[in-house]
Image 1 (cartoon, one colour):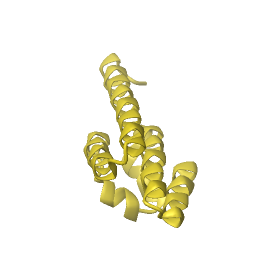
Image 2 (cartoon, rainbow, N blue to C red):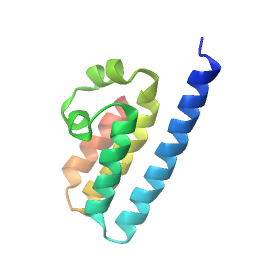
Image 3 (cartoon, helix red, strand yellow):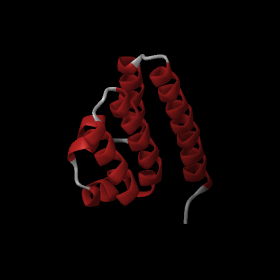
Image 4 (cartoon, rainbow, N blue to C red):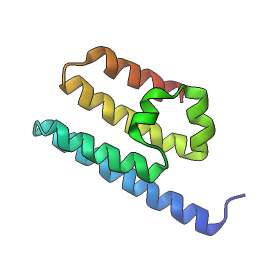
Length: 103
């Protein structure tokens, strides 16, 4: 059972993720892909994982490490896929979307 403090923390984290995903979208639309990646780096840290690690770990390991935050991580993976797509890295974007789906 989650405590009120834990629910408040998760709610705050959810708001932070939603704002970051929106900012990434704005950056991509403006062609500011490096800035979008900076937003992703910072936001992955808030979830408790480095973005580079999320790109290297298998789905099972990510599930264990993230616990209930895996739901939030799926949104970050999808946002990163958008950045990769904008960079023309279509295979990488598809791999990120697949990981998000499997997570």
